[in-house]
Length: 300
Image 1 (cartoon, helix red, strand yellow):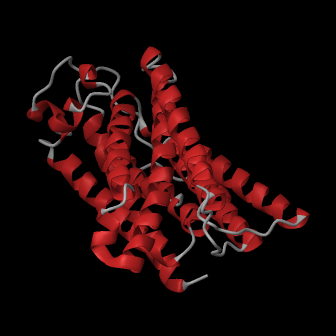
Image 2 (spheres, rainbow, N blue to C red; image 1 turned 30 degrees about the vertical axis):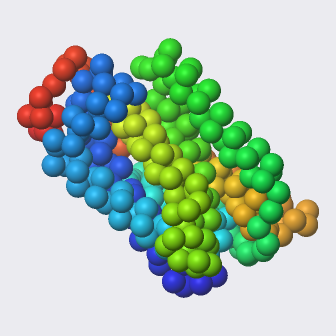
């Protein structure tokens, strides 16, 4: 594994984790009638803390894109999932909560699961699948599932809705990461013109904006405990499926390696859930105004 890819991916995870906490701090005070509306982003743009969180998120996405250009998506995605560790660190600083057994168990499971998956799977590059049907089948399945989850989330916005929206956003971000890698490969082959003449960069932009609306709506209606674990778990799984499915990433497929890879991913998801449900994660506000001014959205 390249040290550069490791540093880039972990740095990206740090920026993403800190950014998500700052975004949720602001979004939890947004008016509920902005739910799943682009107007939510317009309201939040007036809040300095949210803009800072978005700035960190953009920095994380840029670092992640560079990492994807240097390494396999099946390697980078599990490393990006460690953003929850950094979100926990900032949340713990804000709430003054000790880690305790639950926090340490989640930390060890997440870190150990990522390590086990990478060591056992030995992700490496290969020849991308040229069959466009396979590309569209996987991408369509991910986007279709995200649409289905979003539709159901509208009916239960304050119950299961936030977690469903976070999963949907994670699926879109996983596809976005895969298409970001494809765009990087096109840039290496033919420069900027070759990139802009393909559909991938425009899909990356559309998926990014749509995912952002879903994430902010999830942050708006529930605490980080309800939303961030689902987002953090869904994104690497979707990215790995895309990487192995049509980008040509290769993993060890013998029985022993598959067992460790499955155990590693299970440990990652379990660790994410434990950390996400930790008392250090902000609980959010129970009540929100129907409409709010920029001053109302400012943190106390």
